[in-house]
Image (cartoon, rainbow, N blue to C red):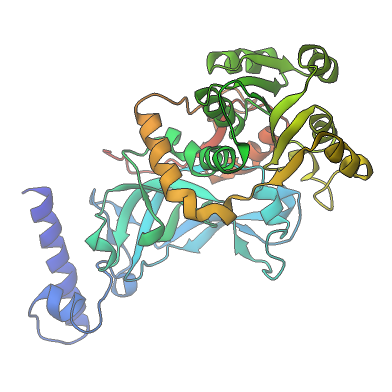
Length: 407
């Protein structure tokens, strides 16, 4: 029997069960049970302990997920792993996604500290991005998506084995590969910020801080595609080698080189654009290194996130004078304020990734002391790994399942 025939038979079986339970005569499963005036989800768990996915495997009624139970910038202190969270039921316009990979972001601890929305109180879900397969969906959502389809998404609550996703927010991807996950937050942040704020052009000099990280890798490559000269800061010779491999003209290992001295010597006129995500002393140095009419784009300040306030002291009292003297500017970039550009950016980035025009480096923790990041339990380790500055590329956690996907 073909897949579609099996699916139809299974759907008729579900419809028949539902009608019997409702004590209604069996007519058409789509019309009397799933259609009509009140569209119903294609899969309804209200009458069954389990329901089936496209591999014929049992999707349990409960799952693991991470939940913020106490506001704190200490992720281990703020977040608990639940083992008995109910697997949610997709509504009419929703997808139920079985997560296969989830992304780690520096801002995960800002979220667990409640810094983005002070009105939200614990408990609440955490995690910004995931990629996986559609395993169930609502009737309206089935107009565009099918069970088994690979999708990615960016929305809170990704640190879970299953996530409900409004179909309108889903991003179709060619396959469930962690490389596509790197684009969701990190790739789009670099793409949109440089496009909208960077004013890049042939011959400009760009300084990327934390250049070997999840978003830095894309800032380096996109700046090179704009024919700029790119400087990248990093913290190891291994990272320096990686930066050279993706086209960085001048990697600087600040653990072994005096960054301020190198910039002053090699770039006496300053740099045209700084893509900055570190904060603290790095931010102060970046401001001092700006050229006349230079632009500094702040996409984060990771050095301060683990403090009580989320900030780190800087010499801001001199900032107005420094900017005025050079007619320089500082622009902040927060991805949520540029969502109108998001779909276009993702489409372009996916095409570049597929065509191998873009390196999407994934760090699954293979070189970490305890090995690969696998399972929600390892999210805590992965965040520690990020704040120790060990990663090259985007940190990604794999969520193995008992069912082996054929995709």
